[in-house]
Image (cartoon, rainbow, N blue to C red):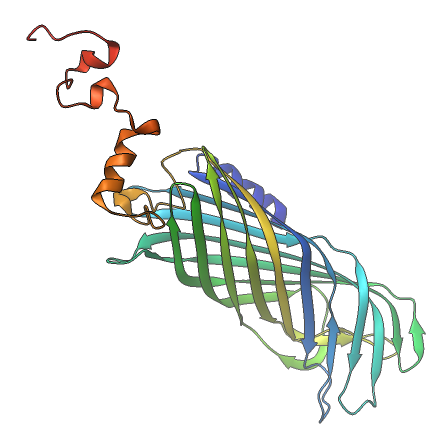
Length: 321
């Protein structure tokens, strides 16, 4: 199943979510480092560092009991960027143009950690990196061949999520650690060692304001994914186009907008049982009284001790008065 179809199905299944967030990274930084195909005493590596736009989608909603569900999808705007390869001995040199597209999908569940504002989260992850390479120059020899490689990894992850909120401000963050159990690449391989597995981590921290059913925030996201795949491949002129060890670093500041389908569903599920509530507020009893009185400090008729009759808020008097 194509990756984007899988994403669409998961998003459609989560439309009843408590909240949906859209992230935009105006200066997303992607760094790639491929290592390990050539058997050189001083090593061999290929690097590219394109900068462009990135985007993300996050869906959260509550499940029965204290459980919750979360979905995250991240990708970048791809374009061709210079790629350099060399051994530390400078005996071998390679340059070229590479277009790199990364897609990272995480789905999981969460549960509060007793006695804290944190909750444990764990789930499954799928990552895909597509490399389109051209204009190879290896030791001064040019090649007009164009190649495409797709690297994929699937595995599990776990971590912690925490949030705190006031009446208008909030902070939200999480740290996730993952391991890839299944990996593959679609480019035929030759030579090199056979590697499987890999690891990943994701760190997100954001802060912002809430207005009715909307949240506006800014923050920082960093994702590191290292995927090991079988072997490597080179062209006729000697240029390397596939590596067994592939390190992807996806990081940038971002701005985000969140819509709360359920106004009581704030920051995941932290409103349940008062978790994470009034973190920024003075918790004195006097302040609590002012909050209960509402805007302007005036009590509604139905909130006074003498007017507890259900009809009082409509202006009717109780027959017992």
